[in-house]
Image 1 (cartoon, rainbow, N blue to C red):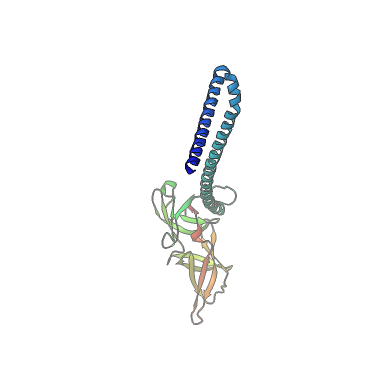
Image 2 (tube, helix red, strand yellow):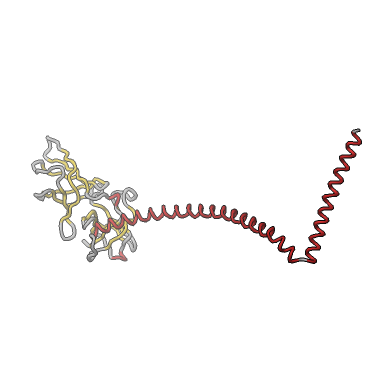
Length: 262
């Protein structure tokens, strides 16, 4: 019985294969006959199939291109963000220079007496309250010239000059001395540099000086405010008191100065 069952199943399978093969053969013959006798009819019948294939191919290409475009846009966005960071830092530097230049020459553009120059190094990069400037003998900078900030206040003098550079020592350099006067009574005193832009001075006890009194130094054409008294060290047994003077200008944030003849 099993043998007869397998025999009938094999016969059925062979019949189905033969029928499928015959169908394929008949379909192929019909296509050949239609192409030979009615080519226009064959193209009309096959056109929707070809059109559907074109649409499917175009859809696949569009999807592939969209993925590529997303990657390209992400890369461009990253590049633009990096450029924006660089421009932001450059704008900050330029804004600081504009503020310094405005303090030096005001909001108008009058005749500049000397040379406005960038500071190449300043404390704490340069030692002992010195500045290295980007102007030298080629711009007529000379030893002894004043170095000015904020509306003409002198903070030091030029001590060395080369063709393209110069070095300035500030009045606040340790142990440097500068003639000055203090208060509305113009009490004369000698400023002693303490470093980091600060000063000290000693005056007789009987002179009436208070915290907040202004200190002036000589400069081009007049006297200029350089600092204020921040503290008074008073020893009751001494005849002199020591003034601790806070500078008007923060030398650590300077970016530009003006150099003028003495």
